[in-house]
Image (cartoon, rainbow, N blue to C red; front, side, top):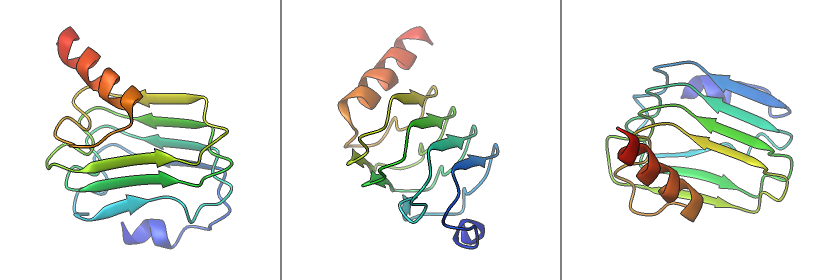
Length: 116
């Protein structure tokens, strides 16, 4: 996760590969990337994180979360203040144990469970 802190804050696209950032056990926030338009998270990432914050990201248009992400613990996913967001994709078994998620994420999690 420290690697994310060293990235330039003016990134427009950020792709996190499969199996990354699993040692991170606190909140994950990308709001320092003020021009971020596209966020892609591979499979099996951030499994130990207890919170995902996507707040007040004016340029954010697309978020893709892979399978089995943010999955090991109960947590909170907050998505607000992202007026340009038009695409949110959540993979199977991501956020399954989270207690609070945006409604569209909860619907995707339930749909993924039903298709297993």
